[in-house]
Image (tube, rainbow, N blue to C red; front, side, top):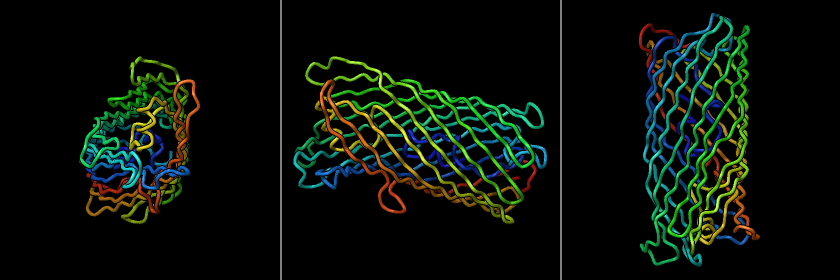
Length: 381
């Protein structure tokens, strides 16, 4: 399993772009534990430097896999036939605080859960060709207790947040000697909801696009380049005080991502490093909501969020016994976000938001995993 399943960011690039280690032939199982965090900081001119928010999760996951290697020398390591199931349902915690001394200081904290799982089915059609289908769900639900400028421990309202991305894809893969090319149609469901006593902003709809992947392998070295793009519009329903009349309008939404991976085998060791770029535009904020955003939405503002992020991932694995591979992995993400906040038909404001922050990053995933081959042993190829 790659680390996308453990990301605290629900709407970042899907698992189609993640790096992975070679699959053991035949049946295998994997268990993993990871800690993930996503932090946002308001860095707008004149804003409180302490207006921060974060969401964290402690992930545990299990996976089952049945893989059949492609004929020797054909392709770049992707199995010609494969079934894979990954499941992870961790608890989460979030916090938001504008810092002591901020006028009308907003503080929030809450607990929730992620509901993440994915499935992949790949089937050989010819020695050089495979077809593949699958899906991945990343869903986060949390309830916050929010203090809107009151004294310490004074609760003003509850807030329900939902962030969900479900990807469905169908594609094909062709192999040459040491090279393979895959392309897939991707249909995704996006949902974002921010519901308080004073406002509701809720969006749920579908985006369509494609993903393309090129893989190369020569000897102990391997490389991959992947790209993904989704676009469309999402219906956004908003209700604000005092009348709470529902008003729905379609808003532009899209995501784009690019990833490059370099891998290497050395005896019983193998590992990879990936770098990636990720951009998105979404008409809601439903993860790690800032105090300034809470204030604006409760006052009747709609949201338009644009993100620009980059990151890297390192993963190292070693065969410690026949058919047993423990591994360690780390992923960090840095970037910026622009959040436009405006009531219907009126001029609004714009927030500049830092995502990630300090090196090596406040938006990261770190974890340990172990893979076990069931049946005949041997190094994954």
